[in-house]
Length: 366
Image 1 (cartoon, one colour):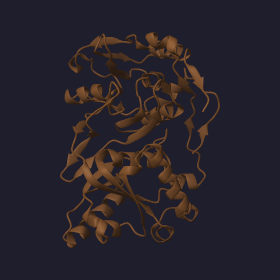
Image 2 (image 1 turned 90 degrees about the horizontal axis):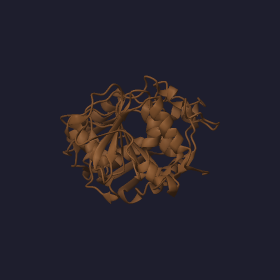
Image 3 (image 1 turned 30 degrees about the vertical axis):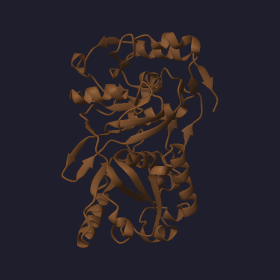
Image 4 (image 1 turned 90 degrees about the vertical axis):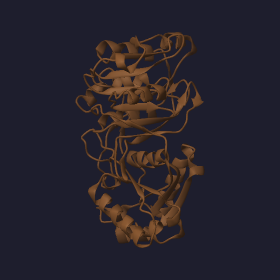
């Protein structure tokens, strides 16, 4: 994927997202996770879609069985274009391991090499451990998963609970795929610099930036997308049936870990549709380039998205405000002494206010 490395005019970058942000939808809370979820693929080029897919699996399950197709399996099973350009298994494996280490997920992963899409969940001893599978919303993938469950039942194994995640798309609504990358197709994402807050402006950053309310019931009706920042805020909105487009969370409240949970869109019998959980590395007091990129990706999606921050989401309101289209409602928690919800609708004034404050940050050269 090519990421534009030229200078970006942050005041106009939101023009990318006119009429592109996800419509606000009702989300649901779930605390009961699967124990052993299996995911599979070639994981070639390990793009943003793969990142969301793998991270989403760890959100819905305690242990993830991450199955990577062997070189022999790619030759036999891959029907996609340019499959002769798929990286060797060793390279794909090493990139997956690197991703897991980056997000400290290695201890919850079981990496496996597979030669076909079925044996690991049907014939191997591991088939007895599994209770769930995460797949994409592609129709052919769901059909294959139903065949897999039928094969399990024929061997007196319980069918796997199916989680489904939509494909990650680019600014044109086209799914990001290894096939496109192998074809040398340009997949464009603007690059934004990384920032670190300076101590002297912390009091300015902590001042309320919008209207203060006590409950989601006092929030206005959305005029466009809705971005909820913070776990407690997101949970309160969901419990009050307030629709959301993008959720930004770090699974913590005031730096204390919360009881684990995940969000879903709907469930029908043994199929649960979940939003993508885009992972972001963002340390305390920073807004790294990856945070900007993941919000950009979230704004391109058709359905609600969760941005899961590994680190802290305290400053994510800056890129959200600067990038989001006009009339986006941004909601976050205002810490003590206020202890309230704060909200505002994005417009040029709010965007310039955020930009002027961002200019007081230090630029970080990664």
